[in-house]
Each structure stands twice: as structure tokens, then as C-alpha cells.
Length: 300
Image (cartoon, rainbow, N blue to C red; front, side, top):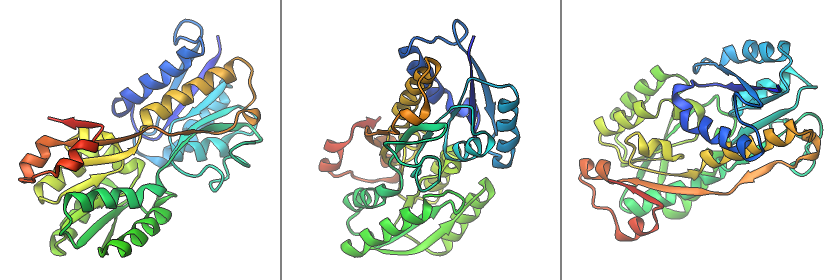
């Protein structure tokens, strides 16, 4: 029975829906876990420094293929082996990260699925502007350890200039404790709204972020639907559920003998705009009808 080594930087409990989507993808290729394929899961529990040892363990076990669940895992898996096929799901540019030579011709032993992250800064700011056109000072919370952060910030700042917003409150956080500190500092520098940048850390801490935003009464927009489901006000971004399903499909193709070098990197193009109406009511916000009309889902 072939063995898939599944490598993730967070935890199984936090990624249940995405793992289910991944299993669906390999099932579409004719593989069912426990019947004709085994999956060895390795989770770093948000401790990125554990990833190299976990990847090395999968290499020692000579798994058939490694499924790298996120950007940090993809980078570590690439460094761990040049022979075992790797299929990634990442929001970062795989070419800039050195994962593949090009999207159409990956080369080497790595391919996968990429989804837009950094380029969404202007869209997120635009939605925040539609919600509160009178908001001038917008804070941006970023994770300095996440590769696409600088590109995302540049995109937001350029968009802000065009609509007269001030992005003069840029707060960094790279741990859960940093997030608490970041909101404490934002309380000292009052802002009208908050834009939370993409980051695996922030996604893993989405309940903490939504709770702090509610406590400080800061309207915020987030880059993935998981945040809105956790109580965040609004989210807009690529469906990482769909991206993980597609990664599962590619793993299935590799199990059937396809070489990563011959599989072009797929780009997930499904986007979701979600509004949490309960949170809006708690904030006392009256949502513009136009904003509600374009939402893919309204949580009530």
C-alpha cells in the first residue's frame, strides 16, 4: 500500500475541514485512506521549528509522496528531499520561494496548488471602505515571518493612496502573545478599522483575533472564510478548502505514476466573501445593502 506523508504546520483539530477536502481529492483519483492508501500525518502544532524534524521523519520512512499542507511545510519539505515527490498547497508564489522552476514546467520533484494571497490587499481594503467609507485611519496587522507579507503591504498601501486612507498603523505579530500585545498597542493609537493580513499563524489564531477585535470594538476584515466562521466581521479570499481538494487530486495522480515535473502548478480560482451578521449587530453596524448583495455567504 502506498503511503502519503502529510506535513502541516498547525494541528489536526484546527484543520479538520481542510483534511477532509484533501481526502476527497485523493478519493476522486481512486484512493481511499485505509483501503488502498495510507496517510502518515505530521503536525508541528504551530511550532515551525519542529517542521524539519517532522519532514526528516517522513523521508526516513520513505513515504511515496509528501503532501505539504501550507507554505512553511512546503519550504521545509523541499529542503528535506530531492527524490520523494512533493505536492504543496500554498498561498505564496512558488517560483519566488524556489519551490518550482516555473508554474507550467515545475521541474524537479515538486508541484502543487497555489492560491492568491498577497494580491488581495487592495480588494480587502476596498471592501472595508465600502463598509465604512468615513474611516480614515486603517490599521494593518502582519506576520513578519510569512513570506508574502511585504508584497501584501505594498499592495494595501498603494490602494490606500488612491482612496484617501491612511495606513500609518502597521503592527507586527509572530506569536500568539504578540497578537495580544498588538491589540494593546492599537488601543493606544485609535484606528477606525483593521485589516488582518494573510498568515498561517493568524489563521491558527483566528478565534483569538476575532475575540480581541470584538473586545476592542474594531471592525476588521480577514483573508479567509475561517475567520468569519470564528466570529470575525468579514472575510474575503481564496477558498483553501478547494485548494486542498485540488492538492489531493494531484497526490492521487502522483500515486498513479505521474511525475511532479510534468504536472503544471494549479491555481485555485474560487473566491469567497463572507459576512458575519451576528458580529455586525454586536458592533452596532448597519451593513450597506450593496455589500450584503455581493456576499457569497451571510452568517446569521
